[in-house]
Length: 450
Image 1 (cartoon, helix red, strand yellow):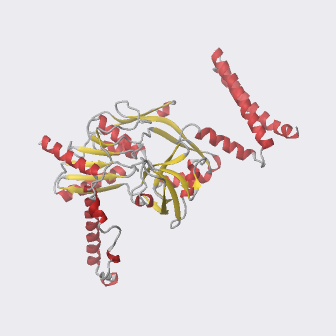
Image 2 (cartoon, rainbow, N blue to C red; image 1 turned 120 degrees about the vertical axis):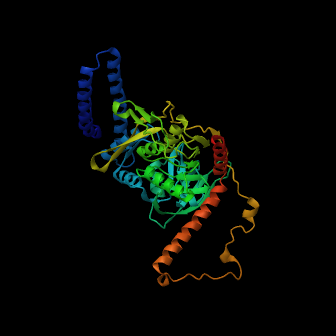
Image 3 (tube, rainbow, N blue to C red; image 1 turned 60 degrees about the vertical axis):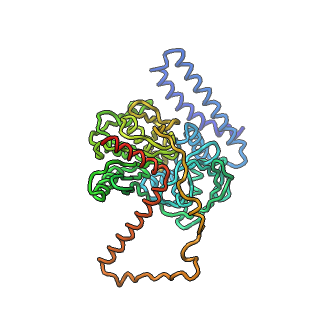
C-alpha cells in the first residue's frame, strides 16, 4: 500500500491536468451526448493505462523509473500508428539527421519492417550492401547471429551501423531460396544521386539513386553532358528509378518538372489538418523537347521515385516500364522536441495528379517486365572467379611512379580511366534486360515519330 500511496500524487497531477484540459475542451465542444460519451471513454481508457503503469511499478522484477516508462509508453503509442512513425531518442534523432545529410557510416540499404522481420526496400548504388548482392525485397532475419524478431526498426539500424572497416553478418531470406548468410564490411556511405551514359547514338541513360535538393540540377547537367557527347539533342531517354528509395519531396517535384510541359499538378498531399494539404504545381518547360522517355521502376522504387513515375505517367509524358513499385505514399513530418528528442509522424498521403493514392498500391507500370538476365551463363562460368593474377606466368604489375608524370599526363591518365569505366558501365547496362527492352521500345517510338 505504501507504493500506491507514493504513486497517487503523480497520478493525481496527471489526472488534474487531463481533467482541466478535457473540461475546457468539453465546455466549448462537448455539448452533444456523443461528444460527452467520447470524454467518458477517454477517462475509462486512461484508467486502464494508469492501472498498468501501477502494476509495472509495483511488480516488475527490476525497478523502472518513471522517465523510462513514459519514454517507452510514448514510443509504443507512436510506433503503433504505422511503420514510418516513430518517437526518437536523442541518439536516434541525431542518426536520422546524419542520414538526411547524405553521408553516414553503414551498409547502404534502406529498410522497413515486415511482420517480425526487417525488409530491404532497396540497396543504395555503389555501397557495401549493393556490391554484396543485397536485393529489394530481401528479409533480414538475423544480424550478427541475433534474431530480429522482437526488435524495432531502430534496434536493427543500431546493430547495422558501426565504424567503417568493421564487419557484419546478415542472415537473408529471399523468395524461392534457402536462408543464406552475407558478410559485409561497413563503409562511410556517400550518396551520388545522378549518373548518366550515352547508351548508343541519340539514346541517353540517366540513373537517379535517390532524391536530394540538388538532384534536378545534377540531372540537367548530366543531360547537357550527354547532348555534347552526342553532338546534338538526344532523340530519347531511359530514366532509371529502380531501387530508388525516395528522398526529399522537393527534389522529386523538381525532377518531374524538367520533363512536363503542361499546366497542372506534379503531386498533392492530403491530411487531417490544413497545413498537410499541399499542391505542387508543374512548371512548364521540357528539357527533352517532347522526345520519348521510358521510366524504369521496380519493387524497390519508393516514395519520391513513385511521385516522379506517377506524375510522368498521369501527364502521359513517359512510358513506365518494369514491375509495380513499393507503395510508400505517405508523408512524415519531423518535429524537434525538448532534450534532443524527436517525433517523426505520418501527417498526409501522396496522390498523383489524377488522384491515385500511392500508399500500399504503388505505381503500376504501363509495360510489365520480369526480372531476367541477358548474361550468357556459359561465358560467365568458363573462368569462374579466376582473375588475371591467378594465372600461372602472368605479367607482374608495373605501375608508373606518379611523381615522374607531368600534370598533363596525370590529367590524361585520369580521363582515360574514366572513359574505360564508362565503357564497362555501358556494357553492363546493355546486358540489363530492363534497359535492353527500354532501348528497343525507344527505337520503335523514334521511328514512329519521324
